[in-house]
Length: 243
Ligand SMILES: Nc1ncnc2c1ncn2[C@@H]1O[C@H](COP(=O)(O)OP(=O)(O)OP(=O)(O)O)[C@@H](O)[C@H]1O
Image 1 (cartoon, rainbow, N blue to C red):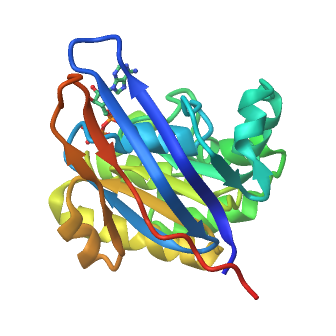
Image 2 (cartoon, rainbow, N blue to C red):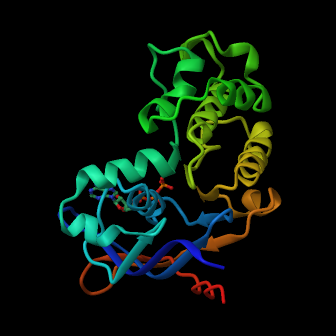
């Protein structure tokens, strides 16, 4: 199995405040089409990791950062922000923790946004995703006229609309009613599986993720040591390369 995403020796720290924090990822591979939940308590670095995987912020140091056949580390080193933005727009879908929908666009416009940015308009897919996610009747509305759970499903549809290779969801059930949370997680997993997209879901609720069928990778957290830095480590054995 070849890795879609491959991280080696990645390190990111926030030092400038009263509670310095460092994230370490010694090894981490994710295969195309694979789903995984990243679990850790609040402040353990899940969002920090997802933002690096979304190519929105660089690691401080790393030995390797490969994604979709690209050397992301080199792109950051060479300041190739255009290439990073193109990779992000074409191959990554993000479901934010809350919000993120554009209030002046309709539901249909919001879902189609990732297609527009990727340069791959596909109105039929917007309709299909909306139907599958149970928001087909809401396409003409603005986000403000939707329930919180419906908005979350619009964000999921938008993250999938341009057929990304990788979907990153940051606590996608955080603002959803507990009764709906299991369904949202299952639905996200099913939609990604059908689309062949790899999926990483950050969660502080590993039991819920496991119930929805996700393998769970829990981070190891270390309280501040003598240097005052709290550390989190996310690690996972590398994938064996296909013969
Ligand atoms: N821009 C920043 N500047 C300084 N420190 C930051 C910054 N962003 C995050 N941190 C710190 O990094 C640590 C990890 O934060 P992060 O948001 O990644 O955790 P999380 O696991 O996603 O938390 P939550 O579950 O509450 O969303 C926290 O201690 C946080 O205060």
